[in-house]
Length: 517
Image (cartoon, rainbow, N blue to C red; front, side):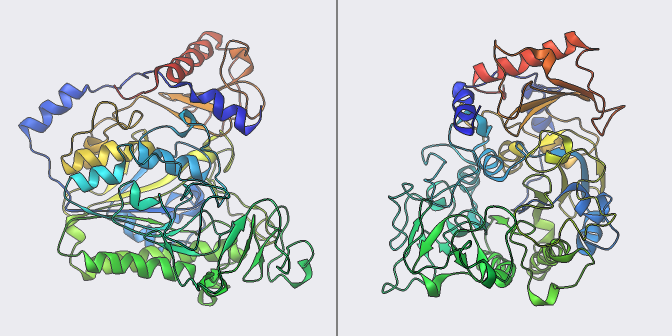
């Protein structure tokens, strides 16, 4: 089954999974008897392709992320946190909408000229933050589309709809990914540095006359491609998709991390006297891995290791700005990744050759794009000085839960029809002794997988095969993560009834349209 068929199949809706040990009534009763302390600000930092094993305090090579390691000591290090997908666009869609991306066709990895994937009429995480009295900002990677879509978006005029239409008061965004055109920044819906005498054109079908081509001009590239990434050439690097014009507006990859940090810090400076919600989506450690010269050679792992160090430093600078503004005790900080790691993702940056003993996914099986733990189990650090006790937390959480959780922390009611798959995890954020609000969750690559307790079921068939009457549940995969965390032994034939029951739960989830009660 191809991507289009997969997404169409999952546009059916989804069923209520078991809620977990606490009911909403119980939670409400707890809140009534003990008023919840509320963060004035929320800072959400989302890395790209940062694996569990890439962060030293999660078992990576010592010293790779020194600031994060030290910062985590004063916060909570979650050990069973997951992205709702093992790729970027569906994870981001789920974060901001509170809805699993597989419910909406077209939310696979978006091309750079994609239409905005989030319906502006939806209740979103940033809209809920606005309702709570916060000014909202989004800086960095977007990859959720903007404008009306291919052939219709005019990059030379104010672009609508954009991130500003789904709840963000301020946006400074990269439209898609650093390896996709258009290679420009978009601030509040307008391309930064646009020269009207050099208009931008973007397409994903053919190159423009006179423009460099990654295949034809391969010898001139400063970073060679291994697969794909051989169409437009920007800053000496092949990309996916073509573009012409906008020469003065094009980004310089080496400066990207600094640009995002500066914009994030400026947002906090401007809004230091009012509550704010800030999303910072870094490009690091996604391809192309082109660190600033001050990080080149910083690690023994080549560009992939160097941009990991660069990410660590980006976090340091943003947190130091928070401290400089005296807002640390008023701000909930969440630092995580959009999915698991990928070593060779299309460029010849020697990531595989220089990997050595480093294990980006730790001891988990798999990586980005896969249904295994390495594809979606994440480093997840939560810190709120003076409000949350430091330590570790083994509660089962998903990034799709951030909408309901942040809303609860800010005292905003979520409409019943909104955020259909987002669970309020505020209690376990504030107290590691509280159980997770969910006992199960769904993650996706081209298939779906279901966690119930420590059991994990992956739907049968090759990538793209979805649950349905024609599939035999016993052709899927079943793992007991308690005894087999590396997912080496498929127990589906030994535990057929459990496999069938979990398969049935997935079918119900598709049909019901929601998992949040």
